[in-house]
Length: 187
Image (cartoon, rainbow, N blue to C red; front, top):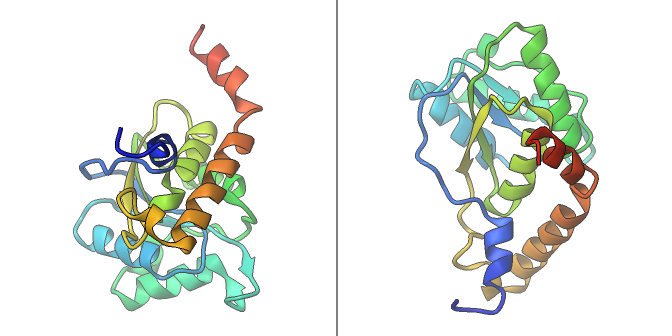
């Protein structure tokens, strides 16, 4: 143990996994360009046949997060028909639930998904999608923003605030789901 708060680092940040080809690339809502830019790069590299950005209206953007992400993808060369539409989500659970519905409505078989998100948001995003998606779906996390990461988050006030906010959200978001996870595993 290097610092007394290393446990927070392990809680909030998902270790980067090797990215393998997948059936879909998921982009939870937001107003940063990085996640969709990375998703577009992964798509153009042949890592998945679809991108599914998710997000409803965002006052800061003056449009839905989905429209914002779609425009970034199209501007980078992703064909619009490869960008699936989910433009109603208001929070991370909506992103996951609505995305799973879009996948089902489009009759896409998903065994492996790549999720692109901010590093400090990775654990909560992953756990949320794992709560909604069937256990048979493997979700790999690709971190798009390494400005605030597991090695430096504690070096400035913004990183500390973001990580502690995520730790608090993780500890409250999933209390209801823990008994269900235990039941699913037969324990």
